[in-house]
Length: 347
Ligand code: NAD
Image (cartoon, rainbow, N blue to C red; front, side, top):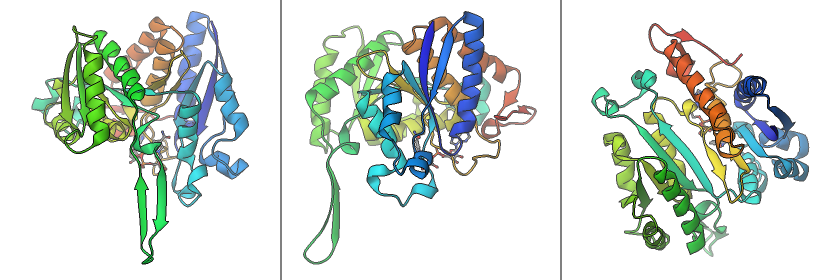
């Protein structure tokens, strides 16, 4: 099979981890007789330096013309002061929006070999951690109207609107229930319905969709309680579905309890098969260029791309197995290092 992949190395550790994922994809291509064509996309801070904007039109067009997008990470302190419209992160929002990628799947699974790397007590880790966070990706407060006004007394006031329409909630809820059907058949919907109108609508729509899935258990949890339950009893969760900002925050927490943020992949999909795949971490400018980056989240993102966008489940499983075998063999990157293990790096 021939597939075109728009590859965005981006900034910071992005180029280092993308290079490793490409090596893995090339092994898969050789073994299974596939051809992966890589179309390099310059987006993020490096695009601001080169073109004056984080997502030049011709770069977005490359993404739209591809079979899927594989991203390292964008951003860094160098671009903290640029106008908000051209910030590195605006490139991601632009791609997600242009490709209509409304559901973001972020698996948080503890590899048993990395139990030591989890900050949780061994008695909690022993229960196992294997959850799938389904985050709404192109709505909510990140996409609502933003305003900063100066009042008559000279004080500035800023606001960000959190908006959801029924269809936006319904389609991501359906992704969560379909995902749960292929797992342990349990959905926990996260909101702040005791305070927010948008959360009350979220809850009502999720309940309506749940009626179509009587085989899947559905419950609600407030976001503040969820932040607590994730560290107290993470094994209770199977599929967690939530809005954009809550999902952004909770998925970082979920990643940390599994050992390292560098381990967690993600997929972003809309109606078709074309998606965007990326590790959930950022560009880690503090460790860029020092051979300290963990590329596993990016490698597992490439595996998700093969599974969800290219219909290559066997190839994806081979990558996942190879990651597990590498950990079994005692190899670790710096972020997961423990006594007696052999250290690996990207180069
Ligand atoms: P970060 O995820 O980049 O880093 C947080 C911590 O985790 C750092 O200590 C870093 O060294 C470590 N870390 C992250 N990935 C790692 C890996 N693969 N291996 C080993 N250690 C890893 O978050 P941050 O520091 O808050 O953000 C840095 C920049 O990244 C900011 O400009 C931010 O806006 C951007 N960002 C980009 C994305 C994205 O591209 N999708 C997501 C989040 C943040």
